[in-house]
Length: 317
Image 1 (cartoon, rainbow, N blue to C red):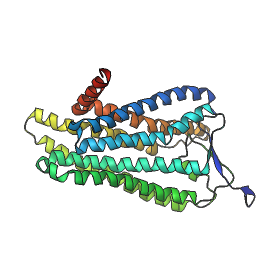
Image 2 (image 1 turned 135 degrees about the vertical axis):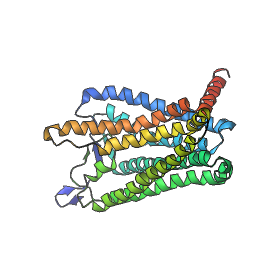
Image 3 (image 1 turned 90 degrees about the vertical axis):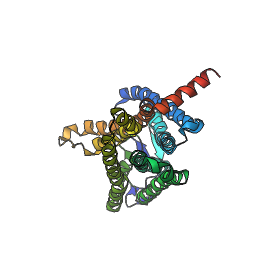
Image 4 (image 1 turned 45 degrees about the vertical axis):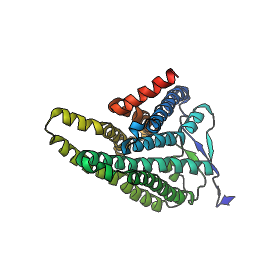
């Protein structure tokens, strides 16, 4: 098919580290090891939150959802990245690219909402402990988790539907490891202002609103903790939300670092900056999901005990 003098794109070439072949094998090993840690760590967390009756609480139900989400998020992209490190020409079909964009975008938006809901759970637990069993009953926290998945999926469906309707012709090389939506939109041979506006609105809803909600929640949480008379009581109260707060700081801190850092004005440094941006994006995609189970295992004594119990049972079974 022809559009003017240009052929319609039916697939894409993922540039990855094609211009840095010596780095590909090294990064393959690093990313593979990190991916295995993600699968193992989050898989264990999912198991303990299901099998250990002491963890059948809203906080750990959300944690199980977060672990499952991290597995889905990395699985939507990391196998493609690993294959790209070993394949001379990294290609992906148009439909495969659309599916990969949908999954990664949906998981990212869902995690933003889920972290906000986890903050609300900690707010109720610390600021209104007597009402916690009523406010955070199963009839409440299960629909909360489901709505986070539905919201993330709906947002992704809107963004990807707008993207796939664009005409892509001519250049089909994506300067990235995966079908990152911003990199794909740059290849469209049409006006993408609607896409940019839509993504801007989505960022406000799925990034700005949860950050504001989490910040306000922790203002009340910290104020309540500081009013606790005993040091032991304050330490115990803070320990119940320290893991979540650490995950939030890493998650949003990495996003802020990725998108708020100044761009180089030196044209000669453009290639190095592109490489830097791609590597930061790649490690962001695996670092946070890898750290989440480690943080919750180290900073939450109930999870730590449940993990030790599960491991000991498997070892001596």
